Image 1 (cartoon, one colour):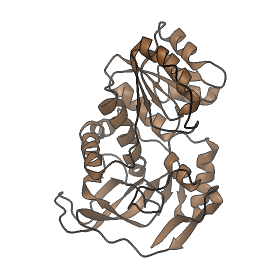
Image 2 (cartoon, helix red, strand yellow; image 1 turned 180 degrees about the vertical axis):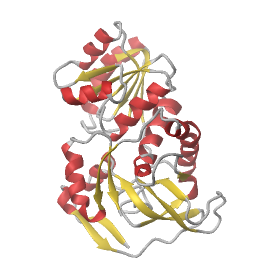
Image 3 (tube, rainbow, N blue to C red; image 1 turned 30 degrees about the horizontal axis):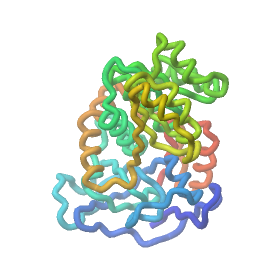
Image 4 (spheres, one colour; image 1 turned 120 degrees about the vertical axis):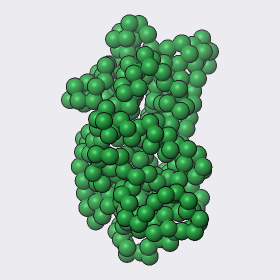
Length: 327
């Protein structure tokens, strides 16, 4: 089969398509003939040498795929049949024509979503739902601040939070993306972080109140301002480190707000935890996709042998929604 490998840490040019042996399903795993794979920020960090796969995971990048069930390993108890159209959450291996994945991390695609578009869903849906709802316990009527409005995480998080009845604020880097966040994605407040101080802007547009929950993909660069932007009893959930790993923390400010900082990562979690999350996504998020409360957004697709071009486009930040590789 064909698969993408990282020849050495670096830019998109280090991605190489190779002919390799297809995986074999182990105990409790299913084989999937991949139709499409989603690009994620974690893939870029792995390409740069900053985010190696967890022990035992494939060195091939790619954390989510859509495709058809092609086979079963011993001990699979989940009710799948050969040919079922599914999506899968992976610890690695998605940039390939076939993957082996624990059955608990596989779901049938949502009704009304085509098989290619479905590849845009598992990683972002699992990340957003597990962090906003399961971890931060976002409640209807609360204000959530979501950084990175038009990326894969941001577009899903805005829609999911709105569907759950939250008031949604978000940040974006230019006026066009601010407009997209409000007019197309439904954000109540959209802030141009290149021109505005987002904590002050949030309070001015939210009746003087900060955010009850903040979903942050930036990390160190935003830590101080995120604490500033929290409401009393607010929860800051850090899921990315695009802006670095080390920053000073004003514990006094955090104490006065009775706030909490939570840092989570989905990729290294054990299969049992991922299974719980995927089952929750199936029960809570899939119906929202079927009835149209959430729309999957695909910015652009690339064939597998153009993985480098796909990463170049992804790195540009021009996309709204997901970038996909087609097998």
